[in-house]
Length: 304
Image 1 (cartoon, one colour):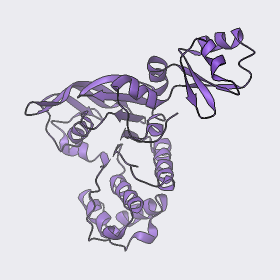
Image 2 (tube, rainbow, N blue to C red):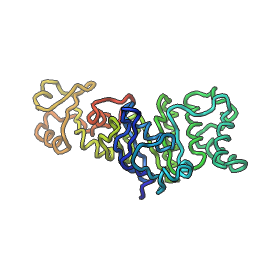
Image 3 (cartoon, rainbow, N blue to C red):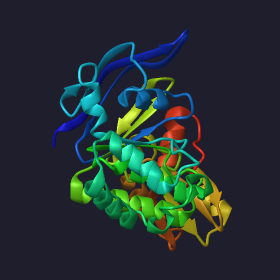
Image 4 (cartoon, helix red, strand yellow):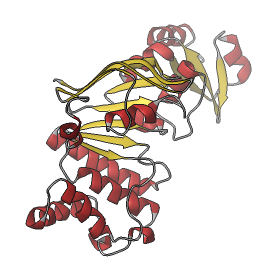
């Protein structure tokens, strides 16, 4: 599997503020790549550089084997982007918004209508085509944002906080569509999100802090490195839990014990079988990883 994005020693400053510092990473073709960080970490700056909307100060960016500096227009044609703030024209209808965007890719006439039919069925907005964008709900507008980004069948889909504020059903619909495109068209997805359960589904994760990479790896690698395992122990009193000599916290009607790895969990259970009669073992979550790496929490859903 080849790299669809290769970033090497990327840097960008705004006056004295170093937004991105010596950033290097790769995105593999067809993977879901999660790019995490608190506000101001450098995520949006990096995305704007990838999309050709912001010049870099240093480093190289290669997308689909083409250098960004020399092949910007070619690269723009293989990237679809959904930004935090909708770029749709509110007074225009959904149809007119998508038609005008498609024309920029040379997609007109019967070819446009065929693609529009595919997307309106895929994202369930056929009944919205004549409605002004300004009259749409947040979830409806987001579906149109995604359709706009997919008009030209991009190789890379950049999603900048795509599901923030959306209802669970709309979030599910969007992720079903994106999963299908990854499976059927080998679409590469570059995701920023505050929902850690979305990041937990990624193939690879990069966590930014102050414009630099603070941690990277698969979700499992990050969990193994930055969090331990947890034993949730039911039907036991706190004095007995204290006697085990491990770190713990009350967890609903139970206690959650922290252990460094599965081997330590097994050792503890074998040593105290009379205590561990009702329990479950779980991995740390991506929320725990993010907190361990940055010392901060992201506002979003709980993550597995």
